[in-house]
Amino acid sequence: MNLLNVVCKTCGAAEESAVHILLRCNFAKRTWELVSKWTKIPMVNMDGTLNDLLKEISEVRRIKGVRKAMNAVEIQTMWALWKIRNDKVFNGRQGKVQTVLEEIKEASYQDVKLRSRNGSITKREWWDFNINLSFCF
Image (cartoon, rainbow, N blue to C red; front, top):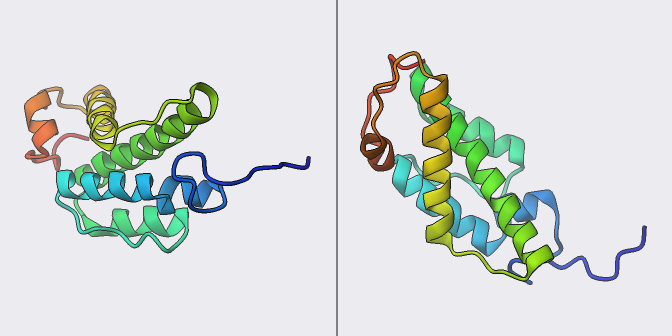
């Protein structure tokens, strides 16, 4: 298949690839910065691969429950970034980073709440990321 235009539809600054869309695009970088602030983890290296990103985040917190919660956040972040890209490509709509963060918080909260043994995690605790997850999974 010969594609005429392979420039990122979200930022227009580089060739589109999975790594660019999920890590290196300016929109993705701003999203990961907000996720980092929200979850109180150090900002990850955006110059590596997706595998590097997942490994780095999983090594930040050793407590099993926190690792599982962060896994839910990682997955929801990447899914949200992919949906934003598709919304721009197919519908011409540009997403907002703050709105994406709220979607990530809500979707990851629902995921963690459904998968945890203890369903007592409140939405407020999750949105503030002010919880003890060591007993939740």
